[in-house]
Image (cartoon, rainbow, N blue to C red; front, side):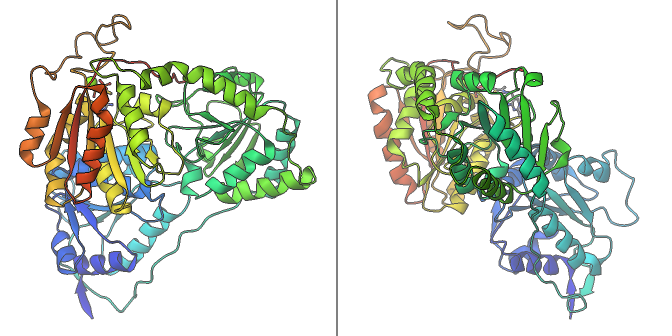
Length: 551
Ligand SMILES: Cc1ncc(C[n+]2csc(CCOP(=O)(O)OP(=O)(O)O)c2C)c(N)n1
Ligand SMILES: [Mg+2]
């Protein structure tokens, strides 16, 4: 049967279980998606089209693949804006499928922006479907890349959506991703080092979440009786009410990163970046590095023992090896958990005080305490923005399950939280989904707010409204680091709750600390009927949070 490429693509997406696609027009395959009955969530710009699909892939830990479409080809305006979203997905390793128009044969080389070379810098794989009959082959390869190895974005470019091919010549069969288990000799080496160590520390990364290995991580931590820290992106990989959980950041994390003699990393690239820890005094520590990709082994620090493979297979093998070498007893218990508790309690004291604050303007930690009081950690989704909401929530917000909180950003591109809550509501329609933002993130998402109304997506945007970029300008914390660029019109000049209320959101402007919990409850109540909410909390600038540990 002859079929056009765009229709073939739509059918393949359905075969692969794709339930919806995020987009910003025009992309030449969109009409076929519509005709084939694939719902489209139309965002209001191309970066957000990518970001929603990207977030969906993250939130579902790659068990589903977010898919987006945007304009490309000879008029690559959409693609140039979408580029920012792809760069972010590539930076954070998100398995999102991006579909765009390809440059037709005979039209290459006419524009200044070189699509092919640009896309190769932000993708795991770039597939330009140069002949219509190659569509099934390219889609098989795309889904193989999305579901195997280190996650990352994949682009499919379609130069001619109307070109015909024979659908039955190479019938499409959905592909399965593959995982690999580590070398048993590396597992033995890792466990030998671990059992020799006096103060091991487990450093868990997002690979644990992608591998669905939280249960295996818990078993491992308990068996070897070692404290656990998680990266920002892995927040929730290890239940934060567990007695061996140290934290994501803050003085207690500093304490353990400094005093450990062996750092046992699982599912992390161990890259010291802007929003992650360095390993202090690394030359005097033993580093065991369990990762899916050799790219990260021996990066920055010498790796004493690398273990390359899927985090779940790795942890299963580690658990078996530790049990075998310790007659099933694991490492002796000692008083690790009680030490974790006391180090953690003393580090958390100042934040717990801020969470109980009754001062006005409202202390931002009071808002986070309200979220923790109102939300059920098992049936809610919270995410941060770039700025203090990231730094503060990742210091104090207690997460009990993977993706109960989405931490994001090796570098964190402002505005992503709105995309993340839109995606979260698709992944978990029954969960309360909340984005917590400051002024800057809100500015990015303003143009997108209409989407939640149009699509009846009942999410809540919590705005920590403090009139500027906190800590950038002067205050009780000192001079600030960007004193020339920190002020925006604040709550005294603009009432954002009225602005956004006019759009049709349920909005409130909260000045009283005693109203925090009640306002949040009202927001989550209206969300149930599909109405989005925006709550503006009039807050102080309070740039206090747990630090990242330096090298
Ligand atoms: C795309 C992008 N550009 C620039 C930045 C740098 N940046 C990070 S946070 C921030 C300002 C945050 O201020 P606000 O949103 O008011 O949050 P607050 O810290 O005051 O709660 C800026 C400019 C960024 N993270 N992402
Ligand atoms: Mg602010």
